[in-house]
Amino acid sequence: MKKSKTRKVMLWSGGTMAFVVLGTASTAYFYLEHLNGNIQSVSDDGASTGGFQKDKAINILLIGTDKRTGAGNESYGDSGSVGHADTTILLHVSKDRSNATALSIPRDLIVDVPDCPTTQEDGSTKVIPGTTGVRFNTSLGQDGRTPSCTVRTVTELTGVQPDNFMVADFNAVKTLTTAVGGVEVCLAKDIDDPDSHLKLSAGTHTIQGEQALAFVRTRHSVGFGGDLSRIEIQQQFLSALMRKLKSNDTLTSPSKMLKLAEAGTEALTVDSQLDSIGKLKDLGLELGKLNTKNLTFTTIPVVDNPEETVKSTVVLNDSKAPEIFEMIKNDVSFTEVKQQKKQEKAAVAARLKGTKADASEVRVRVLNGGAAGGAAQQELNWLQTEAGVTKSENGGNAGTELSKTQLEYDPDQADQARRLADLLGLSGSAMKPGESVTNAQGLPTMTLTLGKDFKGAGVKLNASSNTSVDVDKTTADEVKCAK
Figure: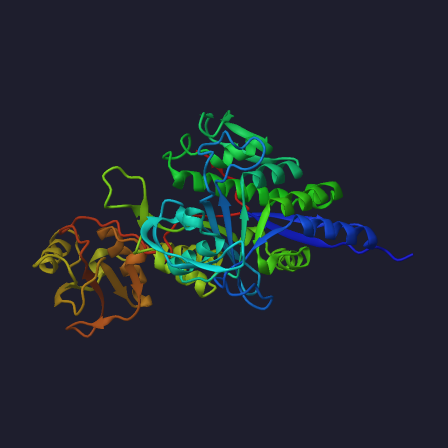
């Protein structure tokens, strides 16, 4: 008698992941056919890449709609909603499957929705005209737009073209959390939100079904009470759900796996490239290689819409968002960058540790690299008369302007650099190991360049390092409490 093979299928629904274990070959065949019948698919209308590939990075667009279909959902907010893109996440999985980024897209972000060729029920194609300067959530549902239009909008917004999309309604959260026996969440305070129907005390709770839906929908009782605060609580919830799905409590329970298979396939609407359990299984096997420690949740950097008096929408933060998009396009790991920044921070901090030379032994020339006129001479006077740094000189104006004051020194002068940093209040990031110059006596001399942050002679600075990715982010293994 042959032993049956076990198959694992990972399904993503609005950012959720489920493993499905199937039994003997004959039973599995009929059950697979049943699950195939559960799956609903719609055309991608040529908006995607044509489907994920095993030897490339994967980009999946996960869309949670605000459509109130399903038992018990009519009481939530706008019962007549056509199903806008209420919660949207661009999931990027690296080519080597070592890391992933889940990028939340605010529903109230002002974007340009492009013209969208859309397949109609009779098989014909209709181009739905685009609109400029509208909320992102209108890329779905509005004027008959389908998920393919949301895909086009995301491509135009980020420069990243999704391979596939998955859409889930309110029932997905309820059924999937119930299938795994609940998800553990944490609250830093009591919450009583009549709009989302969430009422929980501070502390840790296991939630499922209606309560889980209320949790991911709450916003007025957390953070600043807006959609961005709700995104944070949704990311916390998804992290908790993924930890539960990857736990032995779930993976070793065939009954939970079958419930997840049923719930996942019924809750999903996918593009035509993912319209079978076999295709979802292949995607699941790729996603299953990921360690949740290397899954980073972040949100597109935004600022309040400057054109509004009463703030209700947001626009891209042009100084931060483009870098996030480039990282995803270039398959750069957020977790690796985070680790690299941690290492750099430690290295920078180490520059301040060690012995310090006497002030009288510090040799430095002072340049003006963006400070007010005469600043170099003023600082020089203070160094010589007040700080005891008598071996100092005025080097005039620097060749370039700096936003922050910088001290360059030869590694052999590290003890002198630490003394000067202590006197001036320089951070490690303001200290630049490099090369010294030679003074009039032929001795090696450090170079202090006063930047635009210079506050006046003798006034200590509090310079800080610049990190290239300055955005809020968490990883899926972190347990956080909603505030």
